[in-house]
Image 1 (cartoon, rainbow, N blue to C red):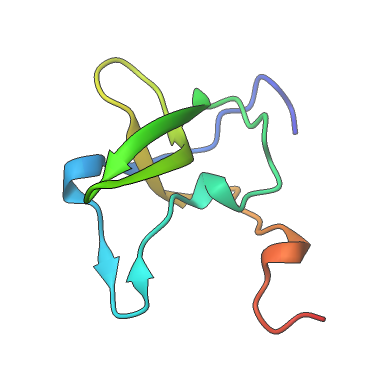
Image 2 (cartoon, rainbow, N blue to C red):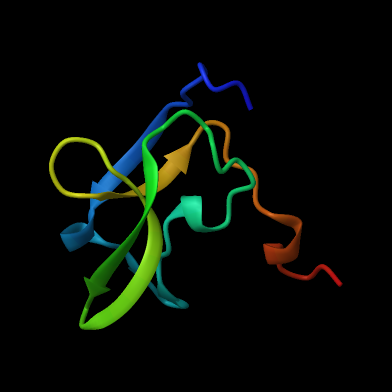
Length: 84
């Protein structure tokens, strides 16, 4: 991916994290093939509902944020459900 390209993302704070019927929502950056997308995504150790997680979070000014939408998101092949 072009280092000058910075895809548009929608992000939320950790304290507004989404809980789904199948469990805790994980940031899209956890399973994206674009590790160097131009956005300030960094590995962070955080506590989420009392559980320690090592997540890739958007690290702009202020607190780290969870990426919930990204215009260039592509899931890693190994993480796709139903693939063998």
